[in-house]
Image (cartoon, rainbow, N blue to C red; front, top):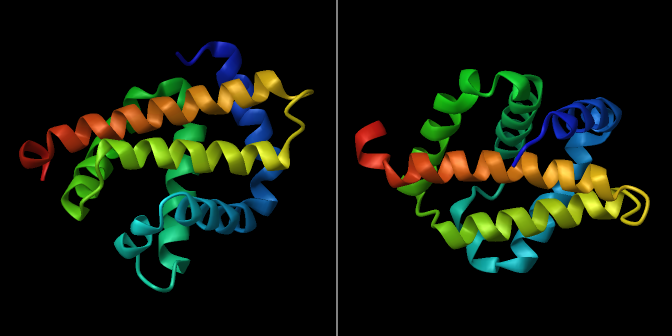
Length: 141
């Protein structure tokens, strides 16, 4: 569950890492493909445009996190497209593990436990919303 305190933590910490976000997205994709090499085949060889889309989605969701209903439809549509590409619920678990590993590497897990919990709650909300869109893919697409 995403609490108001999580919202503040995510937004404040995003502003701090925004300058390094493209590098972090590269680390994320490396971790994602290490965790499940099968996922590499869902992506183009050049990840540049995919990274751009991921970063735009995260930036938009972070900006609108306190008005989540405004971004919900976009995330559901994104989830529907991912379902068409072959993304299944297990892949979202792999996504969560890779993104949390990436964040944990950037933060001090002992000192920043609340911040990590906030990001986990944020990405859980994003993931669940996308999966809902994936379950309704024929109706949305």
